[in-house]
Length: 298
Ligand code: NAD
Image 1 (cartoon, rainbow, N blue to C red):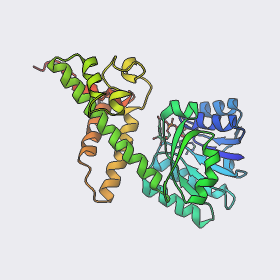
Image 2 (cartoon, rainbow, N blue to C red):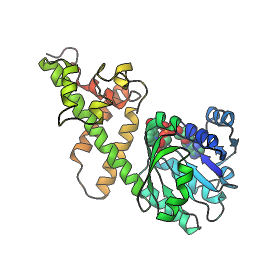
Image 3 (cartoon, rainbow, N blue to C red):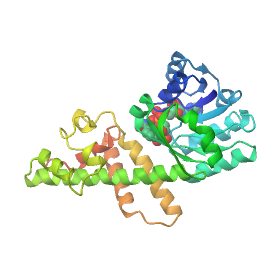
Image 4 (cartoon, protein in one colour):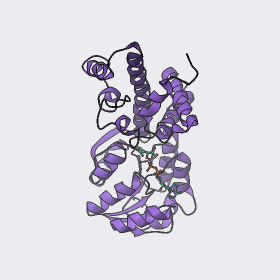
């Protein structure tokens, strides 16, 4: 298929490369020259604007940082909706608020383009390996149309419901993940302070009721899980600033819905503190550093 792709960053770059490997033709646009160079080296045709990237497309995929970028890329004069042919399906895989996803979906529907929000889980490693999970907000027909295209970039495609529900699934999952990581960090640090061997404690948690992904796969205590970011200085993985962004989306969506998120709001403040200390580029499991003894403290 001919695919128009906009947003070739940490996630979009490897996703576009995997579409090329799967035999699709990709016409790509990004604001950053290095990202364009990498896409060209992978076999993409380069375009000079989002509009130009999608003019000839049979499917459009966007992978952008946040809602304001998604609005600009879809709704501006040089944007996706200005260039795309009627009927061509549009997919936004950025993590944004459900309300913006619905707004873009309505604007697309007005000119006869079906729109799906399809945020992903799996991180940069999953994007490179083509093993992402897509949480898709789309009707059944659109979901089935998109499935073979998404299969070029991911392993699991889940239809969550109508437009906007993919983003709801994504922000609820990351709300829980952000909170559970803090819980594991707190338990590991308390165990260490009270005098149990952290390896022993982790092995007990991981065969007991406290077990979760944050304890058994991405344990924040260094040396517990060899492949976890904690065992390589918290490099790689999922940046704390991205977790902070996703918790912000969850807290904002909760406020609009008048639904309290007690733990989510507290978690947001803790990642905010991590970011303020200049640690926002570390994997989010680095939140355990907030529990370190401060110099001068008793
Ligand atoms: P990134 O910042 O690396 O890439 C975003 C790209 O979009 C950049 O190359 C940027 O130049 C481009 N861009 C911004 N505005 C543009 C515009 N107007 N026109 C064209 N290009 C534009 O971000 P990323 O890590 O690839 O993440 C993308 C999305 O995926 C985010 O919403 C993020 O929350 C989500 N996500 C990221 C991860 C992760 O581990 N990085 C995991 C899951 C989901």
